[in-house]
Length: 388
Image (cartoon, rainbow, N blue to C red; front, side, top):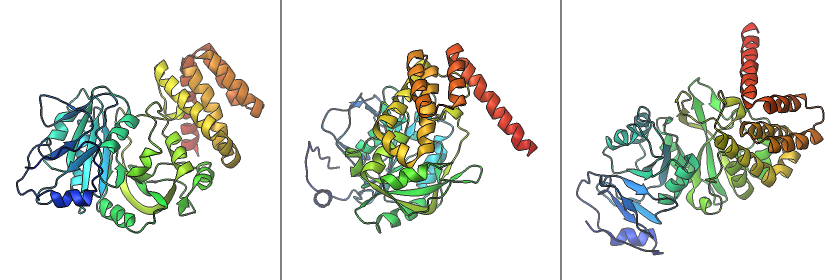
């Protein structure tokens, strides 16, 4: 097999495909069925079927060769994975079962300690690539690594415990061929395991720009889309690896690019995974580690600093919620000074906010009291729902 090593080459892909002969042999291992073209050395394990990414190291180009012809994928599916040995197979099978074949599946493992790696290696398909981080750097870092390794013009994020529905990639690919250059992302619907749909409410417009997205987000109940995004947008708006608050990326993206909202359902979301991260205060059921809460506090601060003026103008309910949430994350991070400052700032804007004042008093007494208070509030809401 001809293996080309290019360093920083700008040779167009259509010329490269003409130079490479079409492979006629079935390639059996992940290492053999990927030609790695990187600007810096990549650390390989003793097992040649896995690639370990060193910290901040990103390959410049990776080309996937499909059995029988030299085909460049049209869609790169990027999946972060951490300790999902019992679930990752379902996701992979949902991809391999698609009737649209021009895709690659890039799984980025965050130093899993269970059998996740072995579960992936059971699948012998040339479209699957596995990249391993030496440390668990979070799902945003994993997605950035996957995007940097991708070669398709469109990126589809799919979580390791979710799955594509039948014909999903055909639906997505068809849409990508009909949109104009001004559309940088396609936002499809999810079906949740309780059979409800996300997002809810459904946006009334068909194209999201910055103001339209913020206005819609002010009344959102379920805000998750299944997003298929142009790969080149990540050069200007990457996911922040220092942030656990993904909505900051969504706001940054909306500030720069337009999104076409599509009514089709393309993925099923499962909420029962044991280590699924909750990114909202209401989803916290136990006292988090201080550094975990501090990361969320930093994310909320960045969101309000970069987009606070627009949120206050177009999404006052969301702005108020973020302002109040900042108090909670400061208390949970055991940063009383930051909590008091956040509370003063919030109360200056909302002097009658009894909730914020009560939260501050509880948190100053003990961060654990906030968790207890939220459990009581959820229990009361459940009782009211049953009674109603």
